[in-house]
Image 1 (cartoon, helix red, strand yellow):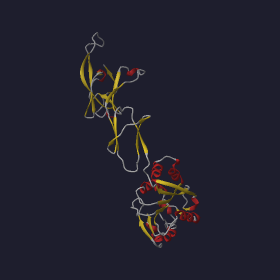
Image 2 (tube, helix red, strand yellow):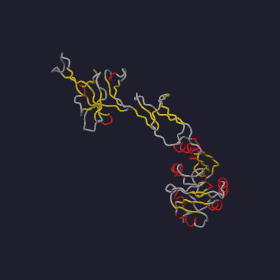
Image 3 (cartoon, helix red, strand yellow):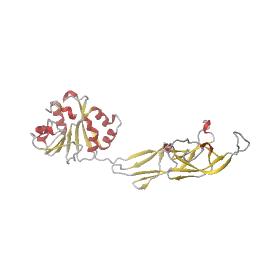
Image 4 (tube, one colour):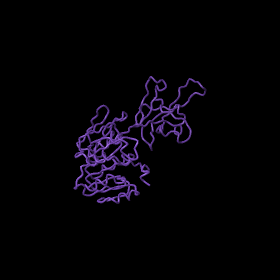
Length: 336
């Protein structure tokens, strides 16, 4: 029944006797070892491991394999996904997992209590964790584990055949993860002032090539790094090479660009930002000192220059404009 359709759960059983014997020999099992095997299948490796060790725990997701595993002595079986089970404290873990769960499995085992893990995994994943390609998986694995690759395993060694070449590797927790390291954070150009603290202690700011560098002797323990960027409103000006922006200014606050919207300010073309005026926060908006030009001529043209009345110009974040109905908007305003 099941053996004829093992791929239902992305299972590939190791059947090559030479590979199996090499696998067992590499594990270097002894009567003092407490071992956890994950994904035993029909028990091909399990039957060889159990007599060699003090205790063998087994995690198998497929309850239909129970008749095979019940025939093996000196094992304690848990029928569940290995991602759901709290592992017992063991000396060694031996597994040939479905390749689809390798990544979440690596994330899980960094919190488990064991000394060595022997695992068959896809060669692609193996190359990643060996550092041949920078991925979240390879970075995480190399931080916590010493990695040893033994050999590749061809698809013909499994039933059914996987579509990829596999590899046998060993993971050992590094004895000391407390390597001195430097953490780098890019400081945005808009930020003129900021404060940095590590675990509540203010740090001296060291900037190299636009990056803040934080060095710590031991990153193995949980740390809290806080960087507080001051978001101060400021005016910005376009290049004189852009003729439409000559004599105009925009207002930013941190990475946010603000705009004047018709919903708050009528006749946007008559608005001017006051050159020496103040800018202040008000309920998620910015209030800017400015002027409004007042028409003094009755016709289309006249000899009278406009009057200017002092007003407060309301600016909203550019991303939020247009949420209160249709209306005009402008980012750059004339300045006087």
